[in-house]
Image (cartoon, rainbow, N blue to C red):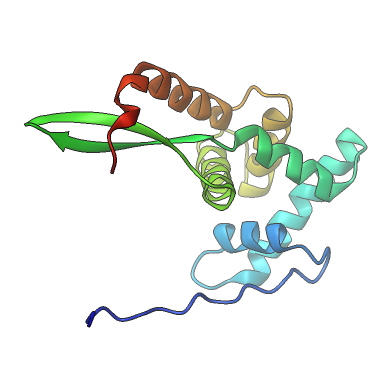
Length: 156
């Protein structure tokens, strides 16, 4: 019998404005120190400003942005015979969206605009047009997975 403690997954409720699971998940990634109201204000400001600039609906814009950044492969290291190999393997949709959200938030913090709201707006717009830091990060993972394609038969 296993002695590991089993953890129940927390239920994430849909956001109050759009009723979407994706948006509430994104807000939770933005949130710091349990301050959800501030995270919601930041996200809704960013998504509304983008929808005004690009003249499209908010939810569809967010989906397009996330699917532009979402990686198809993940690279893990495995030691085989004293040599470390980078092994690429496909990831599922949930994990890909998680990587996309985290990359967008991390790379928006690196931008030069004033305030996190404006940084997030800039990252969203650049990601929509496929020329942001998040897209470059995705492309670097694609390159690494192509280079290490020969090791994909190893199991992790």
